[in-house]
Image (cartoon, rainbow, N blue to C red; front, side, top):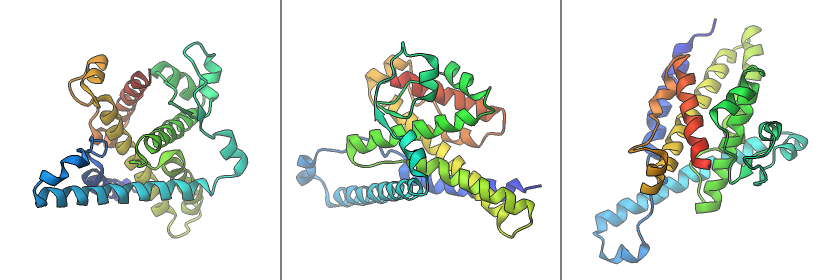
Length: 247
């Protein structure tokens, strides 16, 4: 039986480091025209923050590009992001099977449950891929920078880690259990980051907060480390608010 404690410890460490880096990524930049009147210490702090953001963005883009290259071209073509074609009146099957779109497809909780339960959560994996890729492409289009690794960089390290790690662990090949644990830590870190980005989207303006009935971000990032079934409840809350934002 796999020991979950190394994975949990690794996840918590990565969570602390990652959040300290990406928190507030989407905060608006102050106009460059005001730079001349700023104290040197403030200018230095902003340059450091810009450099930090660039590093995170470059890392995420590189990760997405690397893992995308490991996916077979027919699969990549099948799930290639496209301009929005899905509407509220589109058939349910089209919403469930559509590739990622830009702007993103609103996927309410009932649709997510409908796709996930009969497929044993296989469709939820596709949901995860789709929303990560949509947010990635949206950020890239809006700012030229990203704060997440996209669908390929978020999901496929986990998928390959499980596909390779579980058989290796079963056959008692050294490193198999560690690979599974690292894969679990990676997908958990991606979920934490997703909660952070959903919070930023839902509180990006006072009008948005008012429309969604919020006074602050609807999620706490640490909820991602809650045990089942609490993590499922929190995940559905993320699904709900991301869908509401998309509408």
